[in-house]
Length: 216
Image 1 (cartoon, one colour):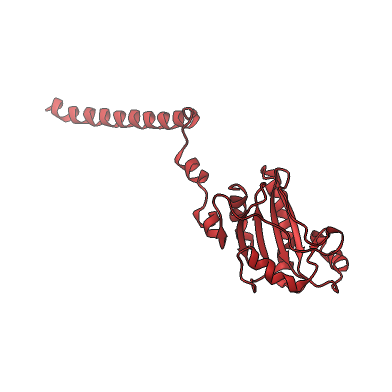
Image 2 (image 1 turned 90 degrees about the vertical axis):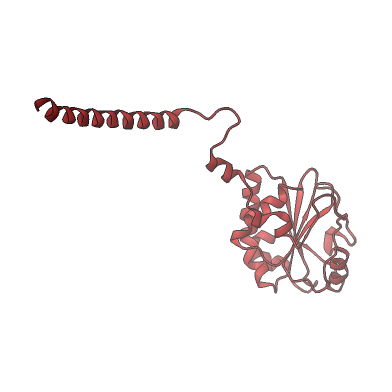
C-alpha cells in the first residue's frame, strides 16, 4: 500500500521536472536563434516583405503613360528669355530629369512645390541622380521673379515663350491638348520620355516617384 501511495507522486514529480527541462530547452533554442546570424544570402520573412516594392506605386500604375523600355525623344517647348526658343533637351549628363509643368494660377502646382523640393533632396541622399526642371506655362506678362520671392523652389524655372504653343507641345508628347496641370514628366539620361503623370502629387506618392526614377 505504501508503495502504491508514493509511486504516483514520484511519477508526477518527474513529469513536472521533465516539463521544466523542456521549457528551458525551448527558451534556449529561441535565444540561440536570436543571436545567431542568418546564413549568407538568406533573409527573414519580415526582411523579404520589406524589400518588396509596393505594387500600388509601380510605374505602370503611377504613370498615365509608362514606357518600360525606350520611349520617344523628349524636347522642351519654345522657351522665353535666355533659354532661347526651340531649345532641345539632350541627355542629362547621366542624370534622369523630373520636369514639372506648372502655372502661377494652378493651386495644386503651388501646393506641391515644397514637397517636390524635399523629395529631390531625399532622392539624392538615396543615390538617385535627378535633375529637377520647372517649366512655367504663364504668359510673358507674368512676373515670375516676383512670384519666386514667395516660392523660392521655382526661382530657376523656365518659361514657355508663348502659352498658345502649349497645346501643340503637349500633343507632341502624346498628351491631350487640355491636359490638367501640374504635369510631371520623367526623362531618362538618354533623353527619352519614360513616364507622364498628370495632376498633383501628394505626400503618399513618394514611393511612386522613387520607383519610376529607380527604373529609368
